[in-house]
Image 1 (cartoon, helix red, strand yellow):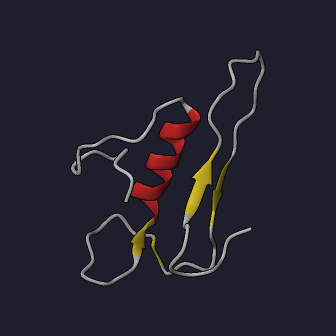
Image 2: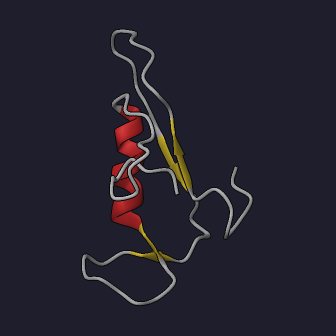
Length: 74
C-alpha cells in the first residue's frame, strides 16, 4: 500500500533470475497523474516517465546518478 499523494508514487520488483518469473509494477492511484503524451506546466506527475522508470527496475536496471536519465531516483 502507498501512503498517499506526495510520498512514494510507484515501485517495482527486481528480477530474481528464476525461470518463468513474473515481476510487478505498482502505481499509487491517488497521485495527480499527467496521462497525456504532451508536456504540461502543471504539478502533475508524468505517468509514462514513471512507468518507464519502474519497468527498467523489472528488467534489472538500478538507479542512475545522471539527473537526465529515466533511471534517476527523484
